[in-house]
Image 1: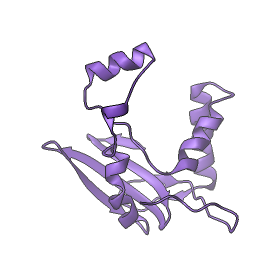
Image 2: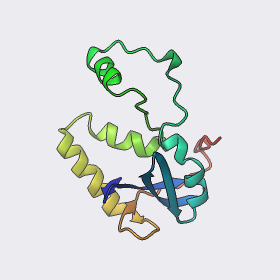
Image 3: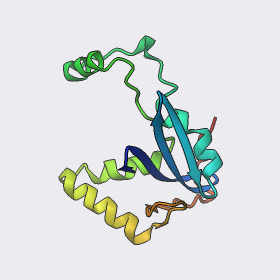
Image 4: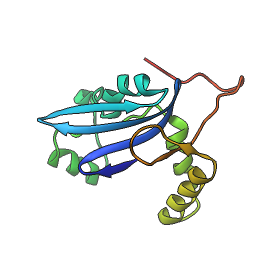
Length: 140
């Protein structure tokens, strides 16, 4: 993910292939542009990525620091990418080393075995090729 000129750019692998998404906030709404074989899927799931499906009615925070932040920022959304492996891999890397080392390891992994992401901005995407034994990607 990259933030440039106020826009958020994200390279990802979707069930339809790699995609790059640009999210831009204009007049209180998020504009979405997407490129690549997975562009349609990525654009259709952009609302989920922005936390649009959050339901705060049953949200109860027990951790004081998080509860204080929630009060200071009403309406704060929690993003959900639906790309479990992309979220899990850097998290697992970060379990045994410092945050900086984990970021560097993930960056090196994507640079080494990833591929150029589609679209107008230079990014790379880790390619997760499903196999017969791979579970299907959840989609709504």
